[in-house]
Every structure is written in C-alpha cells, then in structure tokens.
Length: 107
Image 1: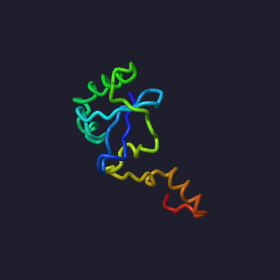
Image 2: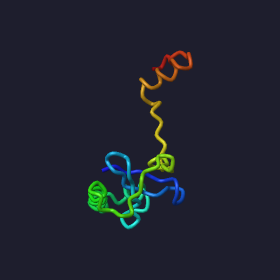
Image 3: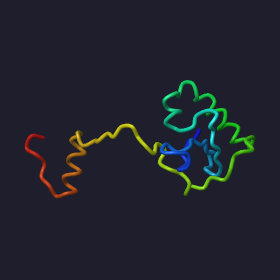
Image 4: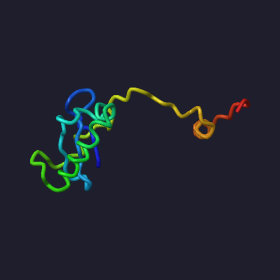
C-alpha cells in the first residue's frame, strides 16, 4: 500500500492511495482526510486503506485518476515535530567536517 498527500485540501494536504506502479491515485476522504489523520487513527483506518489500495490495483475505483507528481506535497506537509540528529556523534563529525570545523574537545 502506497499513500501520498496532494497539495490541495488545506495545510495538511489531502490523503491519496497510490497504485503500486505510481500511475494512479484516489483520495479517500471517507477513510481519512489527511495522512496525519490516518496515522493518528492507524489501527482503525489501516484495514480500509488496504482495501482501497487493493480495489485501486484491480481497477475497481471509478474515482481513480492518473497521478500527476506535480500535485503531490510532502507526505506530512506540517510535521508536528522537528527532530535534529546532531546529538549523534557521527552527525556532529559530518557537519563539522563539511564546515571545516574542528570537533569540540569534549566529544
């Protein structure tokens, strides 16, 4: 099952189920309006999303349209958390090397 977010539909985009070959997609507002909403209710919506994906693969969704990648947003257009991996020594080394900076003696 492949999922995506269209740019249309508000700040969180619109959830679409995407065919395995990436050629077709269909919104699934009756299941979840956005990917964020689907993730928050995953246990409840995953079976319905999987069923929609299966119907899409078998050509059983009349509302399916060709997928235009230019209409896609980031999967989660408004992430609720930003995680910075710079706390990891390997990342600190890479970033400092890229800036030609020495490693702090404390590391």
